[in-house]
Amino acid sequence: MATKTVELSAGTIEYEDTGADGAVLVLLPGLLMDSSLWESVIAELAPARRCIAPTLPLGAHRHPAASDADLSLPGLARLTEEFLERLQLDDVTLVGNDTGGAIVQLIAIGGAPRVGRIVLVSCDAFDNYPPGVSGKSLVLTGRLPAPLFRLAMQPLRLRPFRRMPLSFGWLTKRGDALVKHWIAPVLEQREIRRDTIRLLRSIAADKDLMDKVAGRLPQFDRPALVVWAAKDRIMPPEHGRRLAGLLPQGRFVEVEDSRTLVPLDQPRRLAHLIHDFSA
Image 1 (cartoon, rainbow, N blue to C red):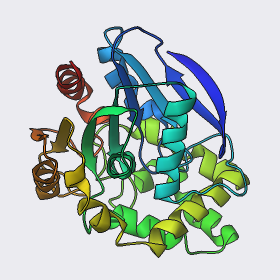
Image 2: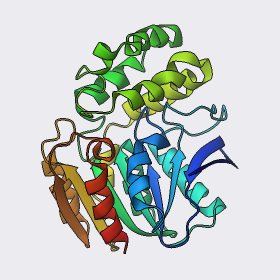
Image 3: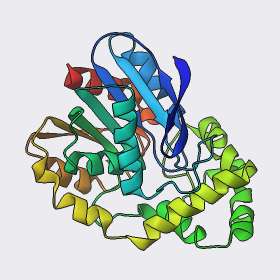
Image 4: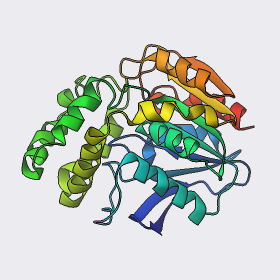
């Protein structure tokens, strides 16, 4: 993969691009995650698919967002659509895990002119927003003044804290090295902490957002694959079934031996599902 950047209205966006010919997949990460969430999945999919994984300003980004950027989830959905337009991508298979899946849903209900099909992987839905004990704890932390937010994040430097249910412990079975990489910007860069606090406060201000989105999902009458960790403790599997039922062309698949971050815990299985679906 080649690491590239593009200048958008919100600032500099970094993205990975395999550059191959064929069907285009755009893969979105979750809160406090970057494009590396998808590395192992992309390794399985390339070169049969062109895989593009942007790092959105979700707290693990390295380039601070513009001071006037809209960092709410609807704002990030619009930013993603701007990204697709700037790269002139059409008939895209848009894939999202965790908060990335919420962004995919927002794009889907907005018409999604450049999207041909969607894949939702264990993600925020319905009243599970912010999701689970970890999401709710993080959003509460975002209410703190910036100096106290910085202090509250410092324990994540230590692996035992990263593996707690309140942080990343219920999100992945085997991805701690990447988690350590993801949280470095919010621990070390004041501007990234500023962006993250803005995002978290926007989530706290609109807790009914995903319920409202769900009511409009039947409008997306294009192929949709919903992939869920069978025993997910953050994103209820029942929500995956409900999402698939709302989508007119929805299909539901469960993945065993995985937590929420299926791209880390079961990358080969997920890649095969996406490959067959995008064909």
